[in-house]
Length: 297
Image (cartoon, rainbow, N blue to C red; front, side, top):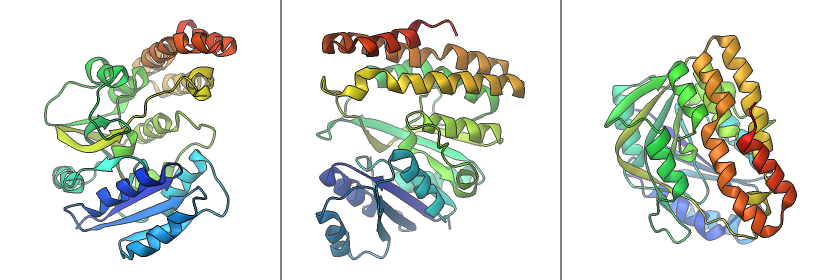
């Protein structure tokens, strides 16, 4: 029977992390191990895990802060089981999440990736559907009912146009994930880079739209968030799209190469951030955002 490694890289809100852990422990399927890798320093966290006293849970605290990418890499390196999930530390699993994955695997036992049904929640846990998520569903995600196997250039092109996956909800075949891992040169777009790397290795994805079994938490972006409006994330994105377009050309995937060069969803995202950067008076951010949105490269 398939065993699941649920890896949870943690940094941030302790209460939301605890809710995430409880959602894992409430799964209908018992064959899992939850590993929490704590990249923070909240004093109460080790004690809370010790009090859980659950053999399915292992808790590790980093000796020093690794940052997002290196902590994600450590999660992959420490995974051991057939199937791996790298969930967000504030996301929630519905009780039938693992059961749904097991049903998909019964039909597609060798599949590299599974994207189950997802619903988006806000800071309070209320179900929300903002602009970004409506765009994912209406403009970019394949509108196919049930379970669909996707892969190769068609899937690469689709994701490079607009990344409609909810990365923390994806279930990975462990050996494939460990063979690739996250690229150290990226800290924002590393999820898309990982998926494209796997597609280049011949892996495929099952998209399951039967119903939501994972709750992805999307926090409201505040006016005080420098990262949201500085444009630095788009500088990294532009660098990635340029590099991956060249790889797609070399592989003989012209549609994927074109999708990478156009990267329409990323441009649209940058465009929507410009008014917020203007309100903050962040003129450098406006220039970076505008360059990303309108560049002809």
